[in-house]
Length: 180
Image (cartoon, rainbow, N blue to C red):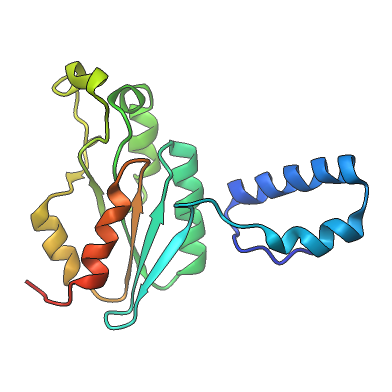
């Protein structure tokens, strides 16, 4: 079977294959499935790309907050934009997840030359963890100074990843035309 899907990330392809096979087992009507697969809509905050034609930049908003998801998303971005530098801005989601996957987070970002870690998106129940570990995983913190520097960049992809509110930062880049 041939399918023209709106994504190519390995994780999403596996999800589609599993859903297709399950649908095939249930419905047993390949023609119906082939006709209707184009109705697939990506969930909110999954591979949402925004273009800045003035600076030739691409901004990505994705909910990825687990190392495996992050790896899949970054592979997708590299495949789509092989000639653009990829800058990663990640907002960890909960201190307990950050502690549990600390080494995996460090590892997933190791192949990227520019990684910034925003303040952890957490809940009140986790206040006791705030000072207990390096929440940047050894990478640079995402600060307003970093944001101003990134605003000057041209012909790059900036991926905003995380389950928190980091995707809201894209509006700053899209709407801000001054170069500080």
